[in-house]
Amino acid sequence: MMNKKNILITGSTKGIGLEIAKHFASDFNVFITARKEIELEKLCKQYNFAGYYACDLSLTDGAERLFRELNKDFDILINNAGMYIYNPIENMRPVDTVNSIVLNSLTPYELIKRVVPYMKKQKWGRIINIGSISGVMGEAYASVYSMTKASLIGLTKSLALELAQDNITVNIINPGWVDTDLINNENLEETFSKQEIIETIPQKRFVTPDEIASMCEYLISDKAKTITGQSINICAGLSLGY
Ligand code: NAD
Image (tube, rainbow, N blue to C red):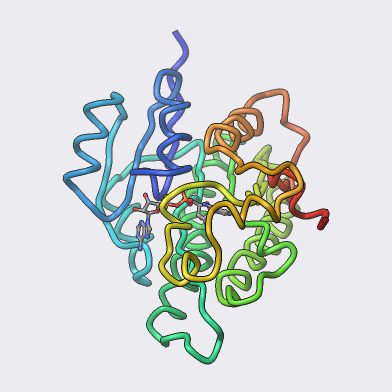
């Protein structure tokens, strides 16, 4: 029997990350991480995940601690954890700005840095960053969020070039609106109801976490081995405008 590959998914206790983890639970050794140890332990037992470590990835040493504590070689990395702040730029608290930059942008970079040596050695690896359509198009009142997600596109393309000959693919998925806790956000809810959000989407529907997980499954598969450096919008038409 072939050994199962190790996959690390950040932000995997709910929303898109948990759905991705569930998708891969039977065929891969899935390692999950978020901030709450009790939840991670419960999910690990419930879905038979291979392991977990609780840590705050908005701290600059988060990636280093996560990697040290799990102490594994990863074949696949999915950088999914992220935070979304909806606020005019002049109202942004410095702590939220810095945490967003570290969690959404710096931590993915630092985790990739740590998984690449093993992937290079074995000449196989898959890296998927979860961006956002806001990083592709921009979003008013979500400037830091859009900035960090746009940075992941540059990171994805640069590393896809750098790692192409090592059989490591690097891609980014940019979801449109997905109905998770991320958008159950006080500032956003004061401005738009869920129905008003749906009205702005050409297909008049949210993207589902399962649709993001299915794209991850494809990008990891052998069928997608020539797909690298791609910025893939899964947004129900949002990137097209009206
Ligand atoms: P969510 O809020 O449902 O889940 C976020 C996950 O990240 C949770 O497991 C949470 O515990 C973890 N997390 C948050 N802050 C953390 C921190 N400081 N340290 C460690 N873990 C932390 O969000 P989601 O909608 O599932 O979002 C997943 C990804 O998809 C994010 O990168 C987000 O930017 C992106 N995205 C979401 C939407 C959407 O509409 N929901 C749209 C575009 C992109």
